[in-house]
Amino acid sequence: MEFPEDFSTVSGYKYMIGMDGNAAGWGRGPLIMASDSVLLAIESHSQPLYMESIIPWVHYVPIKKDLSDLKENIQWLRDNDDKAKEIALNSKALYKVLYNIQNLVEDCGYVFKKYASMMKYEPVAPDKKFKYCYNILKDGHTRCGRDGNEEDGDDDDDFDEGE
Image (cartoon, rainbow, N blue to C red; front, side):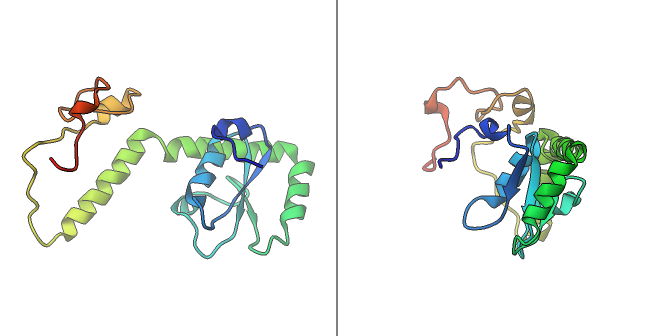
């Protein structure tokens, strides 16, 4: 079975499994949270960071690492459809808080400030300065140019590694 290119096409499923492994398990959980599905999160020794922010049986249904409770928990969800819908709605609401552009920018700013405080040397800015593109991205545009304005789609103005 092929995984759909557009993740929204699977949002019709009531329950979806999120697990770590050899792929991008760190990204699947939040996508499930953004859908109308209940996240069934399999326990793991290496949990993605978002797991620190979500509460079992409020934002997701925990599944033991050996999957021994998978059938039982799915049956519970089937028998408690209203509670399952509540878990999915809680998860979706938390996703909107955790993954909105302002919070992501603030998180990046925190990381950069923390990193800067650990630096042992004074960095030198390149000749060509890049303006902060938050306002452009906030307005729904996906790219911003070197001067901080929305790009016109002309790749000639893009930053090249050799510059």
